[in-house]
Length: 565
Figure 1 (cartoon, rainbow, N blue to C red):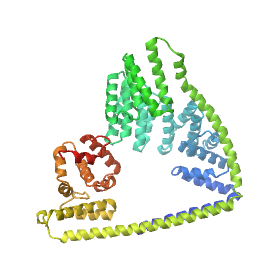
Figure 2: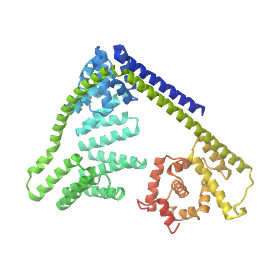
Figure 3: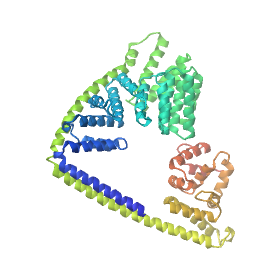
Figure 4: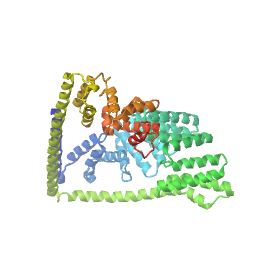
């Protein structure tokens, strides 16, 4: 408790320091010297990697017109552009990044690489994707650059290469990125891009093998969404290899396991139409495409440009197969994607003009701050008061919870002492069935009380209580005793469950089911079984499938209605 209180006081002190800094900034805003602005930019640079939003908030209050030296101007421009790239925001207004690139070239390797990466991303935003790729290639080929500095640049290069459907050229870059990434999810993304690169290079056997590896990894690690994505990719690779029958079987498997209304059902029917077209079944292709169009209308509404870029081509090919004629309507539809690109360039130019206007408005707003300095100080002081009151309330609530936890711990310790000192009483020696039931409910209540407040002290107490009736094997509870409680309280439920489903259920799944029957919540179950809540949800889904519980029916209600249980 002392440690927690110390942390809370430290947080309150930090808040006071931040508020004091803001007050000083308000008082001196109209008289900021270039050195003070430089300190703010340096602070933003320190925060950029770990807290990009905080860094950008510092930069947003700086008036760039006050930056006189080239060094400060270059650093400000570089950090703004790099921050926009990190936040995945529009970079249309970052045209001055070329100035920062020229300034840092051969001066500072870190700023040189990061500013050039930001410049390449700016080129992509304004429609010069090839220019962006060329610029990034010059960076990724540099020698003696640490992986920690190069990884983000290589990541951007690989993403742009995938966007341009590069194949053989992208393969070594994606492999290099895969080795360089240290985060598991990032490695999966790099492997997935490598699959696409293999496809574009027509190295389909390699693509299929690597994607199969991704599917198994996602399945074994309960990554349902990613397993679904990799399965769809598998369908497409099989079609590309001319294995339409296998592709259709996998599509049927996906529908069986993910349902007919999954988020990619239109794309799956589109793939079925392509398979039918490849095998010469024009009628089935037309039928599957009609289903895909209907589903896309419901799934994607007006945001269906990506889907239409594929469906329009298939419509044109099917109509040509049927009639032997090419229609102008199909040509226009296929040309929409190019027209949308031109529209994006025009929108970018318009956004650039708006950015310039916003820059002017910001400069005027900064000058107007001089007149509102007093009001701002009052507002900051009010916010400080609210924060301090809130911190005091949090501190009070925390102390109250600590007292409650201590009371629980004392109660549990008393129970441990009573259980250790009490003589052994067999169930048959109890006065009546109702007394036995109350005793069992009390034991179950102790477990539930710990699950509601799972402090380390409470957990240790529960282990001591559970070990009175036998070893727990490192678990929080003695599961043999828990199963016996459930049998006695719920008419032999556990024994019946084992009799009927022991061949399909794992021990962990049996533990979850008996706790559900006893009324434990998902969070409480996760505490008692020492698993995360996400794992409990995954296991519940597995239980639902194994027991054949309908999707909309409650598992507990289903088991209670089961005549065999």
